[in-house]
Image (tube, rainbow, N blue to C red):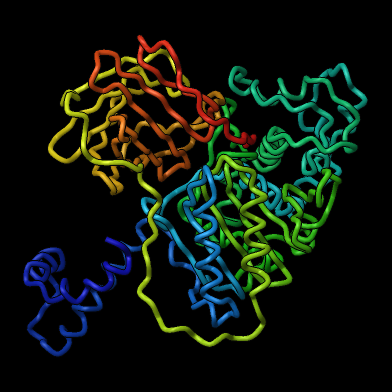
Length: 541
């Protein structure tokens, strides 16, 4: 049931005798003897109860809503933008939010995703860290010229260069250290290991590296005595009414900073609007206005439009963005007074998504109200389920379990069970089984405490993330009898396609394709030829 459906059903609940009886049991002081007052109190009480349900997932529907035309945006333009985004190859759109003049003019969450879905934001996290640095500077805890060596004294083989490295160099990805994306998978002491690397002269060359942001998180923890998340909660998240927020932690107990922020799409929209407003929110200056300008302006050449403080300058004049791997974006467009948020799982270069916003939406935005079109019933968009038939091969067994070789998912077995018109798919991950009953042509969901498939292989990944996680799935049989299963981890990011072939033989094969790994990661023990699939574009978080 959707949130609007819940509200619309209020009248039915209000006058349901079973509800009234239950309400009396919970609230014995409530009386219906005073018929006139009870006719008012009862609906109000129920609506408050329903509102508590709606807000149980935290801060969705917090921002003011309006129709696109009232803020100069044609409805047809945002509908067309959403259609174009959903038509992109190797891309699953999770959310699109378009804001203008501080109001949500358009939003869409294709099923099985919802507004309430949490999401790992990859490098969108970095921009929140830059905001934290600005707040800490305003509290005189550090400044952009603060030297990294003062926070982490050590004897370094490049001592002169190490002594020159500053907070500003970390903010601009100019530490002088060559990025190493794999050491986090093996080393428990990230700070000392990274800082011990060869350091070229800092401040000269842009080298994008999430460890720069991690070190900013470590510095903030040193100067505040709090983790990054603890520090930001009263200063940023609580004033924005972002109550559901978590952050991954390193083996050192430091919030990862450069990735790992776990939050809802509407919370990204709030943060984007805060930046658009110069750090001011409902009469309070949460981030110094001068600092927001520094974040958004070009600080270093990156071979493109430029890089600010943990923010990317955009191709569209004046626009900036927070940018996370696999397609997480906060686009801030000052000249249109707009914020656009996109979350997705995409294996293509993100310039295509941004180009659609620049070309299909922004040129049609005007500074006057537009005539309102005839109101249409909202359409619930649906991410595509696997193509094919629900008819299984005639000789496919009703139950099938397949052992797997060691793989990146840590899955030891997959199993399929047919019951009537449904198929139950299960897998065993690190000794724990996850089972998902699926219906052809529809998304079915379950919740599980088993962690999702994730591209980041760092030690202690998921530390700081409480779960549980939501898994959605659907299936179809191809004409040759191959079973195609599609899984969305809707409280994370991952899209996973699984194919199980030769179902009517004694040697079925298992293949997978996801956004993170270029070839099949799973196969049955006796399979001789792994299935080779198209290699996706890979990005670092």
